[in-house]
Image (cartoon, helix red, strand yellow):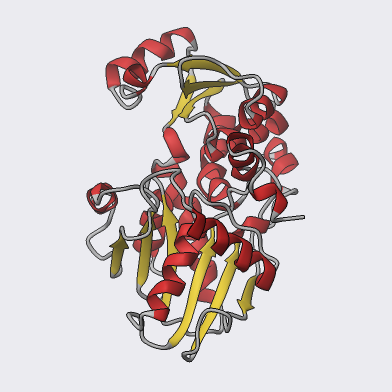
Length: 311
């Protein structure tokens, strides 16, 4: 536990909520609040801390190291690399891609913080949840604990339930709470614990398969929720000029940075639904799930496009 304290002392667990002025977008009587989980930690931010916290505690007590998976610009592998560095936990990352790119800022950060990176092609990466593949890679690293892509497992839900309890503790009766989703792990924890208001999950991916992925994790008494798949902007990591202009305008008016993979799509979706009067007037809490390290990767791939916004 004392080892874990080296990291947990750096974390802001009970992140603040902030009311934001959305009069630039909305004329109706809406009150929009942000749960500032982007402030949890500089590197282990937002839902990544929530999902990794109890995984890390389990590993410290029972395992020699960690094996995990992610894309080349993954928030998960970035956060996990820093956490393992501080806690001195050996880490092996299987990363989707044909070759290692030393200029990729996410991978460079992981290497700097001691992670071993093994690149695997997309066809092989699809086996990341296959029991035979897991058994094969564990033979190379006995007694290493496997954390799935995105960090979603039974241990992660304990952390996301803590987030739900924080939300219920506020002296504000929210009419709705929303969260972005990639694997749906954070969403399922919130839904199982309940937040005292209906939950809308905004998928960053094209298609509605997250409905099934989240449903299979839910308890019989889980609270009401809905999945919105209308704001993926073409699919995972896709974007257009409208989304970029929204990020620019949002930052200008709120001074809260957001990134285009998850949070910008989520926030855009909520405000658009309010503009269309598809949400009743009231108080809405949008959870900022962090992931701002993704801005460096986005700028790397797109000639510094968003770097010019946050100056």
